[in-house]
Image 1: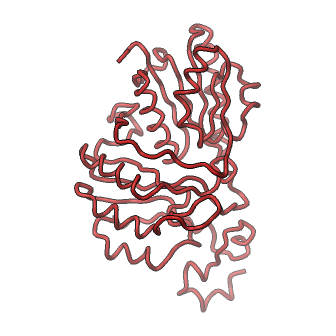
Image 2 (image 1 turned 90 degrees about the horizontal axis):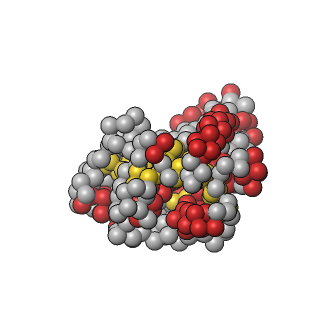
Image 3 (image 1 turned 180 degrees about the horizontal axis):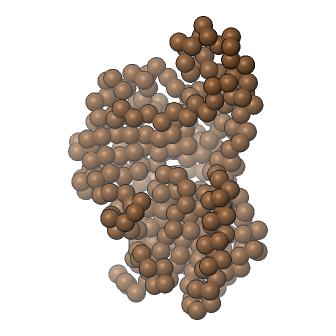
Length: 313
């Protein structure tokens, strides 16, 4: 490996972004860019962005502004912006920040090595922000090494004994306040055999705990048109629980409208499933829930409150 090439990755946002950064770090390692914690040593800087909160977006632009001077000192430096801000801003981002060489949306992160090669050889900005309805998460390959971008003792780094595993991307719910369907596309699930293969490989490397990730994990199994292609999420949990070496399973995040009795039962019957459940109910008002387009009511989430809902607008 040519260790003279270094990659620095800065991540903003959720666990999905953390996992996407790990994937990009692995791909860069496969094309001879080793991770560095020193941004001044980097030959490529990847900023994985979030646009859920305005402050996170502002931090990205502020960070890019600081990188301008770094690129002036090192013209060969490649600056890449990935994630939701990249998808949302696209060409506007490159026009506003001409020091940026690569802009790629969440569905395009797997093209990073290709776009990096083009940016280096052609000395021309690269843009990849398409949200294709036929998007499929690339098949898992056990030949891809699991490498970390940061030392395990750094703040925010994932300990070696646990990992995030993406099981699906995107969302079909279109809540009135949320940008996810527009930046990450429609719900797209990974084949269960790919997920099991990845987690089995992690277990062989000593990983004991996995957190299954998705914008809406309990609707797992769907393809972009909304139909169910694979087994249900409770079925997937049972397959993951059968993997030797895995001791603890978590998942995030869930949507109340897709909460099923079968999933609730898993907390009693799947021994490896941790007693931890992230369920963002959002509001106790049916009126507000309707305005938010959450597609459920207080009664549907909390049936025991049925006799009291007359006081809830």
